[in-house]
Length: 203
Image (cartoon, rainbow, N blue to C red; front, side, top):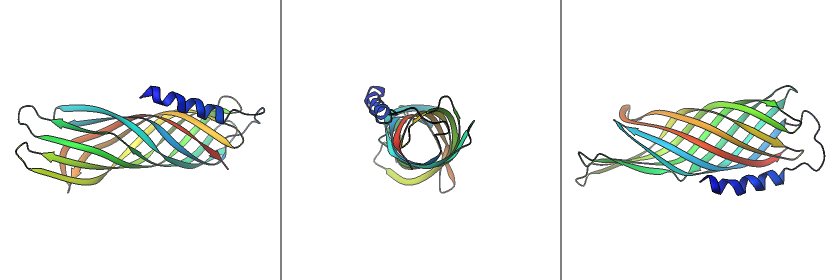
């Protein structure tokens, strides 16, 4: 999947190449952009574990306050993913399948300017993902249910800006804990790692 991200990153980098030297303190203001990238999710069930990959895509918005030596901000994101998978118990023949849907995130970030238009940053916050769970007992009984999963996200990356545009490349890890259905622990736990490329506008 990484090879698909390289052209996107190249386009984003060219789009924000500054026409002239940036002034210091150039990271503040409202930001609106699109997100794409690589999604790797880990599903654990009893002593079974399975990793699946997919494509991440979505939109993001936020506001940053440039304090000179540091940048602090609030970020919102709505994304989706193509990631889905099935785990089968070879001994009993039953299986569980999980398809991931929309993921909503709200969090804060803090950045340190490295140059007048390049910043490194760390982020963290709350994430809520929708998932469709299906169970097949291997003998014709199929049960499916959709629910939302609460979790937390940590990450970090680099951001490049000019007067009107920005681009980011970041890594983030999200943990949704154990999946419960009607208050009953299903034994499933979900986490994901993502590499995201974001590009957009500053206002």
